[in-house]
Amino acid sequence: MDPITVVKLVLIAGIGLTVLSIGLRARPADTLLLLRNPRLGVCAMVSMFVLTPLFVIGLTLALQLGPADRAALIALSISPMPPILPRRQAVVGGGGDYAVGLSVLAALVSIVIAPMADSLVGRLFGVTTVFDPVALLRVLAITVGAPLAAGILIARLWPRAAAASTLVSRAALVLLVAGAAVVLFKEAPAIAGRIGNGILLVTVAIVLFGLLVGHLLGGPDSGNRGALALATSARHPGVAISLATATFPLDREAITATVLLFLLTSVVLTLPYVLWRRRLARSAVPV
Image (cartoon, rainbow, N blue to C red; front, side):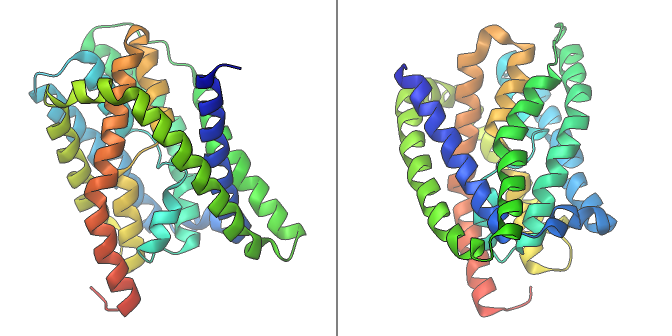
C-alpha cells in the first residue's frame, strides 16, 4: 500500500470517528430538527446555499481568476459543512441538536443543488461538465451519513455510548492531526503558489462574508448564530474537490491546492470568532 493511500485512509478514519463520536451523543430526532423548524432551516439554507454562492459567483467573475480556481471556489460555496465542524460549533455554544440537524440538512440540500450549480459553472466557463452524483453521494455517505447513523444506533443500544464518545473523539483528533500534517506538508508548494495570484484575498473575503451572513441569519439563539456562522464560512473539502474536478478533471492539483488554502484560511480567520463566542457562551451573556 503506497503512502498516499495510507494518509487518505488515516484521514477518512479520523473523520469517521469524529462524526461517530457526534452520533454517540445525538438523538435520532436531532437529525430532523431543522425540518421540524422550517424557519430555522430556511434561514440556514439561505445563508449557506443562496447568499454565499451568489457572493462567490459575483466575486470570481469580477476578478481575473483562472477557471479552475473559480470552479473550486464556487464548488466550495455549494458544499455542505465539513463533518468535523460540530466540534467547533459546540465550543461556541451551538446545541448538539442544531449542529447535527444542520449537518444533515446541508448534506441533503447540497445533493439537490450540486447538479444545478455544476451546469451553471459549465455555462459560465463554456465547458462541458460531467456531474457524477454517485461520487458525491459516496463522499457524503462515508464522511457524514454512515458514521453519524452508526453512532446514533450504537447510542440506542449501548447506554454508556455518550461516555465513550470522548475517547472516540480524542482518537479521531490524533488521526486527523497526523493525516492533515502530512497532506499540508505535501501540498505546501502548491498552496503557496495559489497565494500570489489573488486567491488568498478572495478566500479571506468569502470566509468573512460567511461569518457575517451566518451570524445574522442564525436566529435569536446565540449558540445557533455561532454555529451557522461557522457552517457558512467552512465547507466540505472532499465534496468541493469532487464537484470542481468534474468540470476541470485535468486541473485536480490546482483545485486541491485552492480548496486547501480556503480550508486553512477558514480555520485561521474563524479562530477569533470562536474565542469570542466561547467567552459569551461561558458567561451566558445574551447578544
